[in-house]
Amino acid sequence: WALLERKVYENNWEAKNLDALARRIKQKAKEFDQNMLQTMVEGVQKKLRAMWRDGLYSVC
Image (cartoon, rainbow, N blue to C red; front, side, top):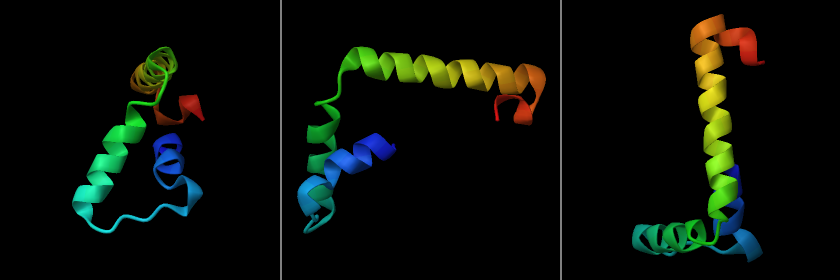
């Protein structure tokens, strides 16, 4: 989420309303490399499985 937030607000962009913010989020989300996103999701899945299997603090 932090990566998306940085892209949305780069160059000190500010939303005038919720519709503008939603459009900006969709626009910036499309700019991400899909392979990078897939790798990030897989990493989260691995951590969630480890927490389920080994306990919450196993991934810290």
